[in-house]
Image 1 (cartoon, one colour):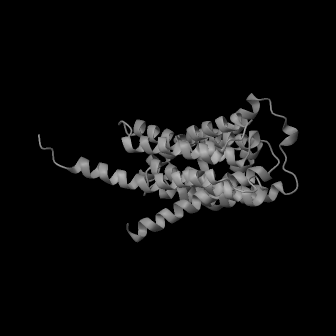
Image 2 (image 1 turned 180 degrees about the vertical axis):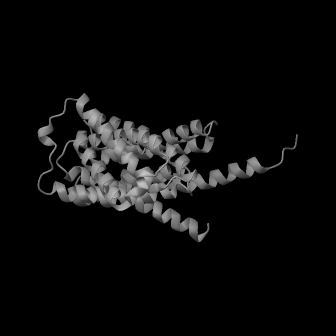
Image 3 (image 1 turned 90 degrees about the vertical axis):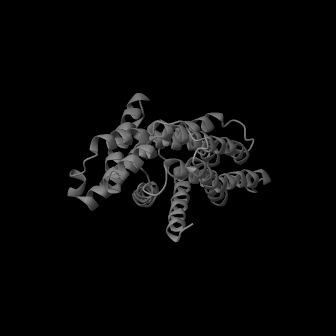
Length: 296
C-alpha cells in the first residue's frame, strides 16, 4: 500500500471518529432531532456561505445537490431520533448495517450486480453489530431507526462520488446539500406537527451546535467528499462500521452507558475490524480473477 493510500485511510478514520462524536453531541444537545438537524445544517450552510461567497452561486450541480440534501437530512433526522429513542450505542449499532445498503446502491448506480465479496462482508458485519449492541431490551424502535438511517446514508455517498468525480467541488456539494437538509427537516417538522417552543437552543446547546456544525460537519464533510475521489462509496461505508466501536468507547467514557464493557463488545469490534481487513484482499482477488484471460 502506498504512503498516499495510507494517509487517505488515516483521514477516513479521522472522519469516522468525528462521526462517532456527533452521536455524543446528540446526547448532550437538548433539542429534538428535527430541530437539532435544522440548526446543524443551517449553521453549516451559513459558515460555508461566508467562507465561499460567490463560489457557491457559480456551482453547476445545484439541483442534484439540493435533492441529495433531502436524503442527507432524513439520514440525520433518523440518526438523532435513534439516539433519542434508545442511546448512543444502539443508534450506532443500527447505523453500522449500512454496508449491505451501500453495496446495493452502488451496484444500482453503476448498473451491475453487487460484488459477492461486498455482500458476504456486509453479512459478516451483522453479527458484530448484534454483539456490540448487546442484549439490552426495550430499544428495538431505536435500533430500527438506526437501520433506517443507514439505508438513507447509503444513498448520498454514491451520488456524491459521481458528482465529485465529474469535477464538482466538495464545498459546493456540501453547501447545497445543507440547504436541502434544512428543507427536509422543515417538511418533517410540519408533518409531525412539531412543537416549536423547543426549537430555540438553551445554555450549552449553542456551544455543542457550533462544534457540531464547524468540526463535525464543515470540516468532516468536506474532507469526506474529497476522499470519494480515492475510495468507492462501499469502502467508505465499510470504514464507517468502526463508528459504533469509537462511539461506544466515547459514550462509555462520558456517559457511563457501559460501566464495564462486556467481552462481547470486543468480539463484535474484532468482527468489524476483520471485515475491513478482508475487503481489500477479496477485492484484489476479484480484480485479478477478472483480468485473467479466458481459457475457453
